Structure formats: structure tokens, C-alpha cells
Amino acid sequence: MNIPFTTIDALRRAAACAPKRTFVQFDGQSFSYEDTAVLAARWASRLHVAGVERGDRVALFLENSSAFVMAYLGAHLIGAIVVLVNTQYRQTELRHILSDSAAKVVIVGDQAHADLIHRSDAPGVVMFASEAVLEGAGDMPDWTHAPAPADLALIGYTSGTTGRSKGAMLTHANLMANSAAVTRAWSWTERDRLLLTLPLFHIHGLGVGLNGTLFATGTVDLRRGFDATDVLDTLARGEATMFFGVPTMYTRLIAEARRRRSEGRAVRVDGMRLFVSGSAPLSPQTFAEFEELFGHRILERYGMTETIMNLTNPYDGERRPGTVGMPFPGQEARVVDVRTRQPLPDGEIGEIQVRGPNVFAGYWRNPQATAEAFDANGWFNTGDLGWRSADGYFTITGRARELIISGGYNIYPREVEEVLLDHPAVAEVAVVGLPDAEFGEQVVAVVVPAMQTTDGLEQELIDWCRARLASYKKPRRVVFAAALPRNALGKVQKHVVQQQLRQVQPERTPQ
Ligand code: MCA
Ligand code: AMP
Image 1: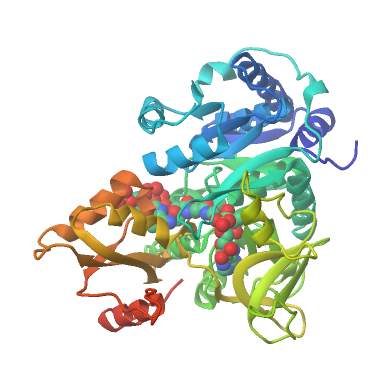
Image 2: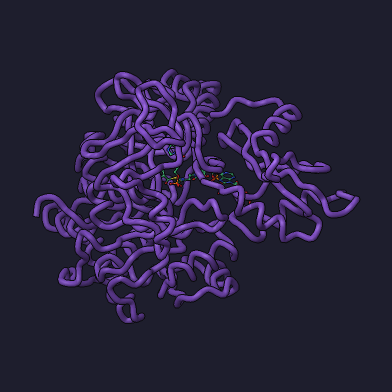
């Protein structure tokens, strides 16, 4: 078995070739590839006993932990499909995701998360990721129930012009084809040690960080979350060779490095060979400041839940700030006219389309959305706008769909608007993104109140959203208005709302 086509092929290969090599390091514990295979087997039998069969959905509602990794691979060992759930999600999101995916089992890390699941009235048996499963000796897996490349491996909930997120179905072949492309493009080998502070419940952390490590048979130093002090301390000890982050993490690393310098402390990243940024635009200013402080040119790449990684700046060639580079090996990208859908010449802005073995199998139980996402020749419409230079570098200039990206998290205005409209004091609402120095963009709601007085209403509406949605989706500000600008058809003109807000609040430099 040379090239793995499923995550289980990759695990089996690593457990055979490098059984004692550390795969995951977490919270002071190290798990070799052999340990991982044994622990995944235990999870597989635990899930099997709970009635999980091939093709069933297993939702992971878990923070970063070794249990996440073992449960993920354990579910795959018996051919189950893993559903990713952001741990900040609250009842509205949980009810939708768990019932839409019809998850048979939901794995949680603690009682508070179990209570949330129960309150959200969603289906699924709640199972605790208790550490007991990690103790004691065990057997290597029975590989006979392993999935086939065309089987679904993951459902990642994303997008939603309707306000309801859709489940993007990724097959094992999608995951491994992209891991093959990414590891090749970034010269990722078994000697690499990735410091991973991104959440595993999104594709950036899981599809790129964890799967890439598994494919390369390298090591991942997994953290509960991002902390600039911890990251700089780890890099100073020369313990990592690679770091992947969203732009907000890089601005925080820059601030922390400056603080240390001002105290006369050294900032060293000796063992590092690669810093990668993605999930949101990295400003040329952050790129330049990082290079000046750390002596590294950040490699920016572009991806999506539906496609994992699409475009990348070169590892060896010029890393051009403000651009996201070129297609990964074996993948294609082009720019088409938004109306005619015909390819555009270099230099002209249109919608970016991608094609390749990494592109997902469609939206879960949503053939209409799937059909709309592709053209007749199998090109996937990303919904992102951009252009290609004559020498092949793509630049992203905006989005064809309404989407706010805050600190690398996607927020669909419609979802927040629907929650706000449920509040009795809200007659009309428009949610937009405004530039934000720390998070790139911030959520702002413009509300037409249903009553005369708005005293205390701004905070009440923010709290209302926080109680019902993931906290990062709540508006940072609520602005009250007598009416919303609408076009002749009565549609709210979001760009006018944004312009008006910018006049009130002068634009701050995005990251
Ligand atoms: C946290 N908060 C935020 C955000 N993160 N608010 C707006 N935008 C955010 N991104 C709020 C919380 O709701 C909370 O509010 C308060 O900040 C503290 O939360 P905490 O978790 O402590 O925040 P943090 O640790 O400082 O988080 C910042 C972060 C995090 C590390 C930048 O947002 C992050 O890990 N982002 C990466 C997301 C990611 O992996 N995206 C990939 C998806 P309160 O106290 O009021 O409740 S895109 C993807 O996967 C594709 C394939 C791609 O291309 O990569
Ligand atoms: P998600 O649907 O959560 O996977 O987010 C994918 C979206 O993040 C893409 O469609 C882009 O809009 C955005 N994105 C990812 N990487 C970049 C990048 N390097 N620059 C700009 N936008 C990005």
C-alpha cells in the first residue's frame, strides 16, 4: 500500500511503517501511530456497540483533544461519517445540524455540552469522550470494515444563503487527494512537527492540519486553542517546524513579539520552516510586519469546506503578498464572468471556479443546492470573486455571496437576521460586515425598532443572539435606524447600509 486513499489506509500505513513515531502530542501525552490505531479500534468498538453502522453519522461536538482524533479515526474504521460541530454552537445551530444529518451518536466532552444537546431537542445518543477509553493495553484494529475511497468521510456544515447551513459531503478520496496535493506543494514530510492551535471542528484544522500530518506520517503538537504567548514560547524552544493560522492569529503573534522585543526579550523561531495563513484575507501589511519581525514570508493559501485546499502560494517560488497563488498539483482553477459564466481573460475580475479530485460530493440530502453549485463541466462555483495575473497568481477581491468572515469564522448575515427578527422589539433588520482591525471583519446589525424606546436594547439584542447562536456571530454593535435603504423591488441594499455605517465609523485598517 503506497498511496493512501482513505484516512484508514493512511493510519494503517503509518502504524505499519512507523509504529513508534509520535502522531499526536496533546496536554503532555504522546500517542504513537501504533497507540492511535489501538485507540481508534477501541472507539470503533464503542461506537459499534452503540449501534453505529457503516454510513451512519457520528457528530463530534468536541474541543481539541486526543479523544477527538481517536474518535474521528474510530468512526472511520467502521465506515461511519463524521459530522463536524463547532463547540460554540448553541441550540439553533445544534438542532439544525444534528437533525439534518440525522446523527446516530453525538460525542461530547463534558456535561455542559451534553445538556446543550438535550435542550436542543436533537436526535442522537450522547456519548462522553471520557478519558477511560485511552487507558490500558489494547489490540490493533480489525481493518476489514475499513471504508472505500468513494465512501463519505465527513460532513462539514457551511454556507447558507437561506440562513440554514448545508452539509458539505467529503469522501475519503477527496480528503486524501487533497492531503497528497498539500503535502507535495509544501514539502511536508515525516520529519515535520506541526504546531496546531486551530479548532479540529473546521476543515482548516482537521482537513489540512490533522489529515496532512497523517498523510505525511509526521507529528502534530495539538493545542486546546490559540494563545500567542504559548505559541511564541513553543517556537522559541524550537519544537515546531510548521504553523498554520488565520490572519487574526498572525496579528496577535506580531503584537506579542513586539511586546517581548520592547521588554528586551528575544523572539526566536529557529526550527521553523513554514508559516501558512488562510481562511480569511491576509493583508500585505501583516505579511510585511511578520517578515520583518520573524524573518519568514507567510505562505497564503485559499480553501473552502467544500473543496479543502484550492490555491496556494509556492513553497519554493515567490510568495506574493495579497495573492493566494496557484492551484495545488492535480487541481484546476479559473475565473468566469458572473453573468455569462464564460471564462475571463487574465486580469479581469469574476467568480473563481475550481475542479479536481478534492472537490466535494455535494450537499447532504440537498440535490438542488448541489446542482446549483456546479456547472455542466463539473466546475464548482466558489462564490468568491477574484482575478488571475498573467503569470498565474490568483487574487481574491470579494465575495459573490453574502458572507462575513470574522477571525476566520464564517457568519451568514441571514442567520443572524432571522434570530434578531424573532425578538419582539425588532421590526426590520440588516446585518452587515464592517472592517475590523483584529478580526478582519465585524458583525454590525442595523435595526428598525418596533417600539419607541431603544434604551438598553442594543445590549439586550446582543445577549439575545449570544444565547441562541455561537457567540462569535453576535453583533458587535447594533445601530438603530428609522428605515432600511431598499431598491425598487423592496430588497435591502446592503452596500448602502455599509456605506452609511462607514460614514458614521471611519474605516479601520483590516488585517
Ligand atoms: C472568538 N470570538 C470571536 C471570534 N473568536 N468573535 C468574533 N470572531 C471570532 N473569530 C469571541 C467569542 O465569541 C467570545 O465572545 C470571545 O471572543 C472570546 O472567545 P475565545 O474563544 O477565547 O476567543 P479566542 O481564543 O481569542 O479566538 C480567536 C481565534 C478564533 C483564535 C482567532 O476565532 C479561531 O480559532 N479562529 C479560527 C477559526 C477557523 O479555524 N476557521 C477555519 C474555517 P464572548 O466572550 O462575548 O462570548 S474556514 C476553513 O476551514 C476553510 C477550509 C479555510 O480556508 O481554511
Ligand atoms: P468555509 O466555508 O468556512 O470553508 O470558508 C471558506 C471561505 O473562506 C472561502 O470561500 C473564502 O471566502 C474564505 N477564504 C479562505 N481562505 C481565504 C484567503 N486566503 N483569502 C481570502 N478568503 C479566504
